[in-house]
Length: 450
Image 1 (tube, rainbow, N blue to C red):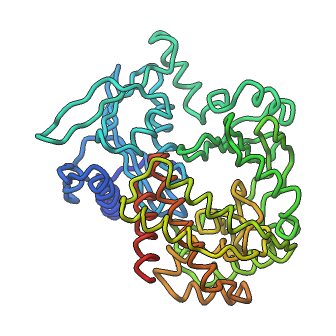
Image 2: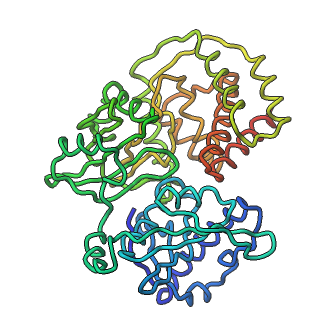
Image 3: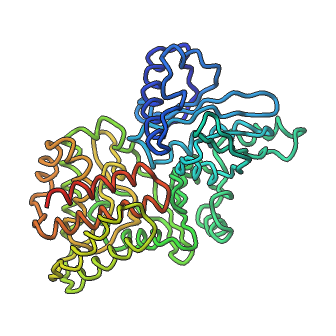
């Protein structure tokens, strides 16, 4: 992803791309807050081009996937709008754009407002250090929450030099715990931050750094994080079929105790949000790679199905917005499900285009924080409700690469229901409204098919 300044007023094709992203982004917000009285949702091309704003754009392979517009004076930077293509959600686009504005603000205060009920946006701003300053009813029944970010410089006197110091990427002191910083400085002495790839909904920081002319990816987890431990296990036990082929990042350093790992940088762009996400060859390669992962080992677990049933029931005991009638039906169904022995293999746990890179036409894999022993069919779940659903050619190509279809009907149904419950409940808990909506759609579709 590349962040750069844009001028939609002087470029009609860019303005049209910006308007399309803006309309799509605000349509999601309108659905979240239950109100479409959002002025940018209804702007015309001429209005976007005439807006008296400075702009940064986020690009993936020269495709605009997000933008931020703001006005400014000598003391205040006022973020007017932040828009991200829904197809690029949860990949750090919004965080990177806001970070770019904060980095350029220097000694000035940064202010922004968003819908009071837009929890994903509020979580993003609060996670970046913005403080709530008030609420305003802008039209009857439509409330916005106002935020401010304090000046980043020590004083206005130091403003010019501070802007120079902060015009580049953020320092990792803001993202890592003290013991993680100390360990990282031993592992990569003199390293500098290039880019923050974190996506903001969980307490895992993902930072690209340069040390002695080489690029690395640093991942750091919070105190309760389990993803780093899983990722380290995957790197040490399961990724050799991919790393030997240059199709996954190579582990350089890792400490489960300190929730920290370093891998070599793997070149490429995310498949998600690019034309590669619509190409059958992408899915054929992904199927081939998944088959290599699954083929390494297999164990029979007599208790797996029972444990998974209990996990699904536990999700239903936590906060969620699944309808009470649906919850009652799910509890009754799960109680009647069989619990046969299950064959478990190494799985990725989040197998979909947002975790695939492509470089010179070659697909590779990232993000192993959900890796675990599971039935092979579990790695088909995300693709089935997203990519296979929209284009059957992608499913055909994927199965051609994988070699067989492991989705036995009964086990596949149970897997789909569990995935839908977990998606709807987890996304609700972290405030990801669009992903929560996907979970509810998954539930409705799988239950309607029975």
